[in-house]
Image (cartoon, rainbow, N blue to C red):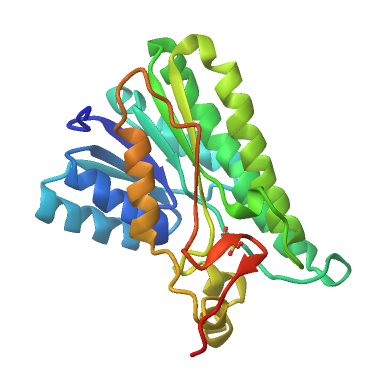
Length: 258
Ligand code: 8X3
């Protein structure tokens, strides 16, 4: 298995959930990390933990991915040799609200569209030219089963994940002649802060999403991402869709009585 030793891995959304789990698993494989998110203290804490546990060298970048100016400024603040990112993990993303469209909140739509689609594009736009120049690199996008099948009241969130799916497919074509890999890792129900954020801190409602299911963990998804990143040079994993055993796709879930 190709080594991640001294590879530069840029992780967006690194302050929690799947991004944080990726930081830990890639650090344990010897990668050097750029940890990006809005919450600086969380990133500092994580960088310290990874230094103590794995002796990981890392840099932290705190910025709002929804703001292209901030994304550019943060990326450009990196020393030149750190800009040659080997693997970009676009894991920043969120859901806000879950209502029928006619009842939805346009402010929530903006946050989802600006983070999940535009933020991913802004960051990729900064990192990619350096990969293209070297004709080497790997972009791993965090998609979702919601990018394959819509579900009731999922409208805008599902649309953002369909967009991520389209961006991954399109990037793969555009980069064919540059030897750059593009993978999409698309989980179903993962119990992280995801539903708590979606329901604005309503922990009981968030818990209920995973009732009787034995959901995926952030570590399960990080494991799939690590798998994509550690294939031989000539192998690209286009897409991994992973769900809990009790889930077939967005709309088919069997719950055990609890
Ligand atoms: C997360 C999957 O079904 O909770 O992207 O929206 S779902």
